[in-house]
Image (cartoon, rainbow over the protein chains, first blue to last red):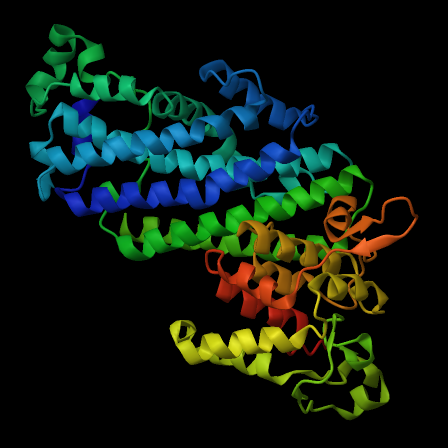
Length: 297
Length: 196
């Protein structure tokens, strides 16, 4: 982790409540939307051979970084998501213990910085996992004979976001799906030394990079979760994030029905109308969230 | 209760006719009256279920009021028109206004009553279940039919399993948010729906 660079990007002060609420929200999104969506997809893709080249490319990157067991990629992610939730519980307890009520950016230790980056990474992981499923369903429906391709269905921004961030997603999934006792041991081993400009250069070489950045998050972009970096209306942003996750679960379920009908050779304009409606709602929430991030940033 | 007192409700489902019926006045332009008057005819709906839905739409927290819950359960006892819920399930096929999404919705509702989980949310069902949608025909899955009726040993005949309405409502309400699911499902089945 480029520790000093990271704390410089943070707001002057961050409240402990914000961090704890953020973890709780990510946990709810994973449990109530993302995991049920993967359950739906796992049933649908049991024994499925991936046909879409775009989906195949994404899956290759994920499989190279994460140990997904013997099943297909969707099944593998589905198996790992409950471990992510378990790790988040531990991270939340740790944050409760080691963060002050108000943490100033200048008072961030290596341990605190690692915890905050894990929290940011988890919220990014939940968002990516959800969008990935939609991408997979659209790609596979097209490859099975559906009219609209990924590029005709998703916006160019969505396609670019999925393809450009896949390696970060794979890396975060690998980190957060480690065995909980491994994550705990790694966190406990991080020194509680305040980061400053001088020791940020010296400590990694004297103590070892594995001590100050045991999760190897150094290459992950700093800006994964805006609430720690820009002043914004957190409550509204979080409510929109939650609603978007709920809509994405519904979209995955509708897209599953669409794919199954397509595989049987039955196109259904009535169902497509409903899919378009939910997609428009998600796109409008995406646009609202992006505008909030831009306006406050 | 038999099927002599049945009626087809706005979305196409068959239900008990002997309940309080509501009917909205729809303003028609001259062109609509001349053009396709059938399409804009208001359809009679179950007035009590629609009232409950309207009330809870405006003030959702009233769902925790005992009187409101009692009204939902009473409406549930009345609206199907059969003592055995599975008889009601099987009669739906005889409606001329049902399609694939009507059968899927009924299967999903039974899934909720058994497991507390739905495949699609009720808001989505409310948009998908349309009497004139251009989609596949009404048809229950084999697995679902096995749950509803069984072959009488040594014969070619089937016997419908018994799921009395009071047991159905009890089972429905013990699921998480079961009472909410019950009144919203009843609204989709028998409530107001004016398709233009």
